[in-house]
Amino acid sequence: MDSISPASGIRLGIDLTDAPLLAPTSYDPAIIWEGMSLVDFIIVAYFASKHPEATVAASAVAWLEKAGLPFQAIRDGEVIVR
Image 1 (cartoon, rainbow, N blue to C red):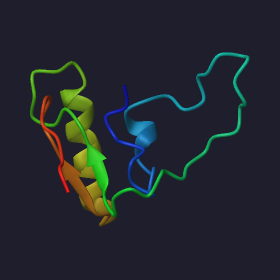
Image 2 (cartoon, one colour; image 1 turned 90 degrees about the vertical axis):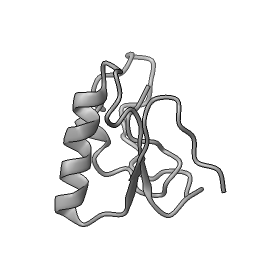
Image 3 (cartoon, rainbow, N blue to C red; image 1 turned 180 degrees about the vertical axis):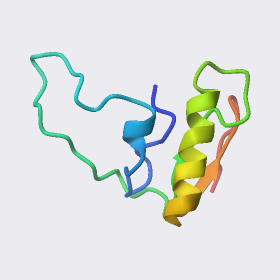
Image 4 (cartoon, rainbow, N blue to C red; image 1 turned 120 degrees about the vertical axis):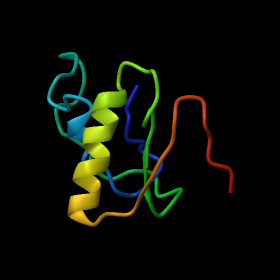
């Protein structure tokens, strides 16, 4: 599961949590960087959690802060309700 959600229209930083070039040979090798645009910020899951991807999520948050991109970090089990 991605630590950075495709719910936003921005998928920059997704490569920090997953290897986008690793895919089964039956998949289209083209990377789709656009998300679904359900929210206007990037969702970073597993932040500050006891989840195996928590360290990677922390790195993603640091990268997004430095890049000045809008994001919301959530812990494992948290949800965003709008």
